[in-house]
Length: 145
Ligand code: DQA
Image: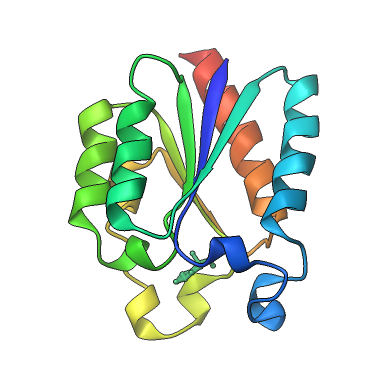
């Protein structure tokens, strides 16, 4: 089972970026823990981070034919990007949306996700552990399919 983990803008700054909201773990350490968890499932992970909308669309398209599932934290593009939503619809690869913070307890502009309607599920508010939850949920979904 191959899963592509995609992170959007400013997620590369985790650890330094507003740690009170996003935690103190770096993206590298989150990805390393996730890779370790994947071994036991088992699942094979690949990781992409991009600060640009086009980079995220390219990453989603690149999964076509080589990945069974996608975990994505589209970051700020969650709330604005029709292009990312359309890319997920176009590839039709089961996708889980992750947010470190509970976007629904924050500013109103974060309450709307353009991605949620095309995702199989969404996890928000559990910090870095949300990626682990997403991985478990996605693998279970793919197994049952
Ligand atoms: C985020 C929430 C978004 O609203 C924000 O723009 C981010 C991170 C999260 O993981 O909590 O960059 O996706």
